[in-house]
Picture 1 (tube, helix red, strand yellow):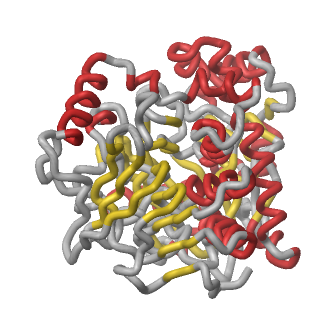
Picture 2 (cartoon, rainbow, N blue to C red):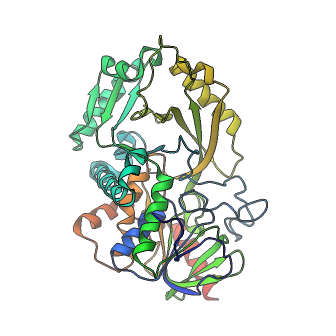
Amino acid sequence: MQENNRNRDETSNTNYPSECEVLIVGAGVSGASTLYQLHKAGVKDIIILDAGQCGQGSSQGKVSEDHAFIREDDIYQGREFQHARKSGTAVLDKPASRIKMMVNIYPCTSEYFISHHGEQGARRYLKLCYEGLQIQKQLARLVFKSEELEENLLEKGSLQVGFEKDEEDIKEEFETLKKLGFVDIQLWGRDQVEKQLGKESKFTIGMYYPHDAIINSQQYSANLVNYVLEQDKTTKLFENCSQVTNVQTINEEYALTTLQNGCTIKSKYVVLCTGGLFTNSTTLCGIFTPCFSYLVSMKEPENINTQFHRLEHPNSMNYFTWGFTHDWCLTQGHIRLSGQDHFSAFKPPREDERCGILAKWIIQKFPYMKDSEKKYETKYGVYSETPDKAPLVGTVSPSSKICYVVGCNAQGQSSLTYCATLVPGLLGYKNLDSDQKDIMKLVTIRRFALLNDVLKNQKKEEKSHKS
């Protein structure tokens, strides 16, 4: 893909078009996928904005010298998102950058998911994740050159593992997933798990998901956006742009986006694809929770102690623990490990503490890495959660011109890739097919937007905008 494209504006913070057909905020996996799906539907004159470089997870990054604002209104009243500089798309630097999971699994136990959505909703989620996986793999083959594909997409499946104390729960989970129609999942016993991870790890049971993969989400997003730019000269990307500070629907006719530098862009629709970093509206207060994720990359020592089990070399499948505490893989001689922090990202991050714990965990599970204990890279980003663990997609009311594709979690890349396919239909550029209409019953943002307090905030906002 060409790095310099005449549709790309990397430096200007003032020369934004005053109008466009659709404005997309955020150029990570969700934004890039949404851009592609709108392009595929024949939509022209699209603008996609990112506060940093495309795909690097900086949608809320460079706002001012010191901090990033969500919005000043009667709810937030100047609350600052000062600690969130990177979203969930952010990855560690090469050579450990291919780190993002593409999984066909719930971001919680199936029991928890069923408690919120019922068995039919649980089946819908498995279906949308599976479809999202296939779509993302197909697009990766489209936008990566053949010599780049192996480096940026690894299709070896994933393995969820547990300890002896977890065996009963994992076996129950396995049976539930089979009942819900997950026909390809495999239950692995101690011998199979130890062959992969060694006896030192203490893992005794696992569930193998053969369709899962790992992708360099950062490069994937950039390549996907560049692909559209090359195909359609009416589409424009603005990187390192002034921060979006407000988006609103005007008289039920169009959307108006305001940037921190005072520029405004009028569009028929706005699509917010900004992870946990920008919700714009009080509509999502208390529903959309930004949380920290922490990443550690530890290089394998030059002299490896062969008495200990070594991860598959040079690249492994992705592994994650029962309970979703950690996920990890070996990529190009680096063990990459991530861990979630479910505390609000409005609080300061605890990078040193959390990443230190992750580094010790690697040493504990893989003793041959001991010589690398004090040599590791770290990064933290912000992902978002919803109470019922499903994405938020669509507009909060029929009159709104603001469409959300948000609510990603640690396992959310595949689900959001599918959700991007819904956007052209939701905005009226094509018809939703029967499967898409069925999936919308699960992911629609209106499952929360119909709550009384949410509707009250929405009407209050619309009233203030009209006045």
